[in-house]
Amino acid sequence: MKVKDPVCHMTVDTDKTPHKSERGGERFYFCSAACRVRFESEGRK
Ligand SMILES: [Zn+2]
Image (cartoon, rainbow, N blue to C red):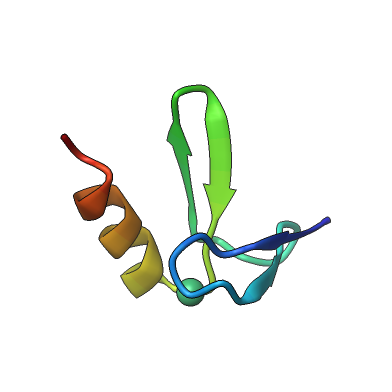
């Protein structure tokens, strides 16, 4: 499945990327570890 990286808005293939995170029961996928780290640090409130 193709989804959008919420950090850089690049299209990511969920079957291929090892970079994922979960928030509020929703799963997010990223193009890189850097995007995942950024998402996780920015989303923390
Ligand atoms: Zn990205």
